[in-house]
Amino acid sequence: MYEMTTRERFQRMYEHRDADRVPIIGGPWGTTLERWRREGMPADIDFADHFGLDHVVGVGGDVSRATRRKSSRRRTTMSSPSTRGARPPRTGSTPAPRLTG
Image (cartoon, rainbow, N blue to C red):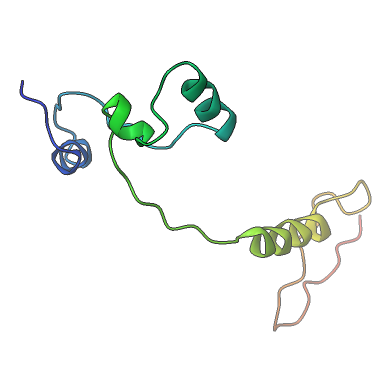
């Protein structure tokens, strides 16, 4: 099989078809790059070009605030020994009746 472009490789991956190899996503840590350069990788070349890896672009964002909000909500609805089996109150409606037993 011929060497595919990154686009062809990803397209085949999403179509569940064979490709020349698995697309490689991600990159090394900064300390790893420093070591590779000490061991002979040229400083003026991108690691993906040097090793023949796929070029990908990612879009990042700070999701820590949303994660904190979700995790704090989870903590308030987790069951404790005194509320085990009880449902959390419904929002915007009358609370469920308490069962005595």
